[in-house]
Figure: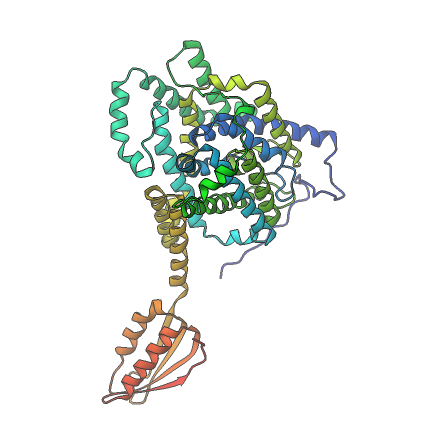
Length: 517
């Protein structure tokens, strides 16, 4: 039997004190200094990611910054998780892009607003903790599918080309993209910028002293921007519209468009996908962040309501949906953040940047942002976890792969739904074990058969095969007292088998039956 030991925390290890405790140092100069430093690090990580996610979603770059501000200034103040940081996430990029293409940018705010209200309702009903019951294989498959679709879409942006459409179309168009890139004069230049950005993202973290000071995404985008600017290279750059020009609250016409004939089911599916996927990603991120620090752990229901409040405000501003982002959250913890002040301050720095330096976005090459997202998409693929998962839990690996492939082949909502159904079916199959213990075959008396486990319709063919293989010229005593569960299908089948055994040429007798169908 495997034993588990719960390790006690060492008194010598630094820990983050819970608010209101004797060791609370929220207002000490050292704590404030640590939070300010961490907020600057998170801000530097967030800027290229916010802009890149917005551009990849088919939205103005400034809307990504708006979502980041809400994630810091509003969600950062609310109770729930202590150190995780919220903002626009690569995991929702594909879904947001599809929504913008289907309903228009103006209607995006209405979708996000409804999704935020739904998250608030789920938090109020205390459903946050139930997200921990979602199969990890489905979540990993969801992230892998998102990563694949994100990569195949952003490969086109690396060459300043437009993606044909969804996952299958993007995959089918890759040979054509290669031919067009080789035949073009400017596309290879953009591709070189994008690939160089990915190389910097991979190599920069290995230089640990420098990586502690400047995050890799900022360095990669800054270097690409500097090269493009100095050499005046012919590559596409981010279009700048201004912060006030892109903030557009949804109007009645936007809500009316969602209830038009033929659009209701699609809009409902998009809202549910926004709410469920953003909630699951946020709460799984919270669980991961809780393992990185010794401070107060996440209240899942409160965190779900905080995410809902943030998405409600993002919807009112016409911005992108938000979720907790593990990259920014991990950077926040590793930078030494002590309280939620660090994530609030990161929202302040985003606001200052968007108001004071909006023109800085106009010099950023789109290929560099595409490189950042291709790298982010690759990190969503469970490459290292796949081998051990296949060896130890092959059924989970199948669910993961099926979920990812379904997302690429169809869409986010249908792919996740298929993954959940497969996970439920797998669990039902694995828990539906029934075993027959047979005694007395070698004697002349009755054959004694005792059934153990859970008898469900999933194992009925195997159960009947074993029973029908018993000698027909001997009396059989079937003992069902060892069954923990006997469903109606099995009960009916066993009754029919008993009737057949009582007929000419055989006999059967049910000794005991204690499992309820």
